[in-house]
Image (cartoon, rainbow, N blue to C red; front, side, top):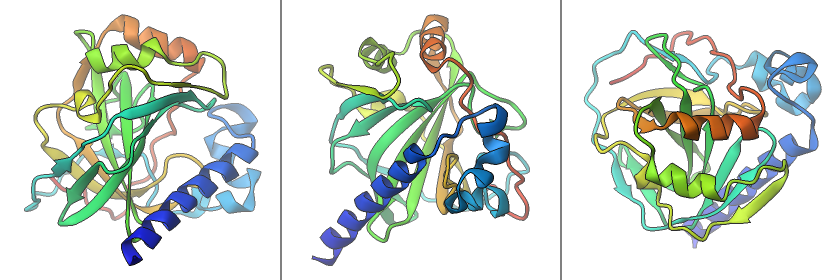
Amino acid sequence: MKKISMAVSVVLALSAGSALAAEQHWGYSGEDGAAHWAEIDPAFAMCAKGVNQSPVNLTGFVEAEMAPLEFNYTGLATEIMNNGHAVQAKYTTGSTVKIAGKSYMLKQFTFHSPSENQINGEYFPMEAEFVHAGYDGKLAVISVMYTIGEANEGIKKLWRQMPVEVGTKSGLFSQVRAEDLMPADRDYYRVNGSLTTPPCTEGVTWIVMKNPVTISEAQLKQLSKVLGQPNNRPIQAINARPVLQ
């Protein structure tokens, strides 16, 4: 019963955070841009005062013994939404990943263009961020970078039903599995960080896949047209955080 209760509280916390951010008008440029998020609402104060903020430039890697990620993705994406800040897909309950012996449940994934994180100072055309929640309320994000190349079949299915109008969503009739959007080689970097959108909550475990996946130029253009502008938060100071590999 304790696990069930905690899982419910995690869902409520995620929903509350999303609702709070949705109630406030924020964006990626101008007076509502990332440099001003903390001024928009006191609840967004961490966006300015946090010391473990994301995204970051992953470099200066520290060699570490890290166990392979243990994926148990059994579900499908259920709907895709254009929330005005990103294209976001919800996922059925029950799909998990084990990171360093701890299980997290996949809740949703979002797409950003260009990428939010950098690897050795390099931005990528697109980044997908798979948000997971643990039973203790802690969050973990698995990040996948995309480069231009062959068209991605999973992205093709998602984009076919991607809403153009802000604030709208569409049920997914195509079967889209999270693992279809990830590289076959699951080597990764690990760093502590935060949410990359208000309220910029810290204590988030970031797993960034070393190997990118390809999308076509046309697929990138389709996303960019729907977004209307870049939706990546600027790189944050790494401070004393090690980037493990």
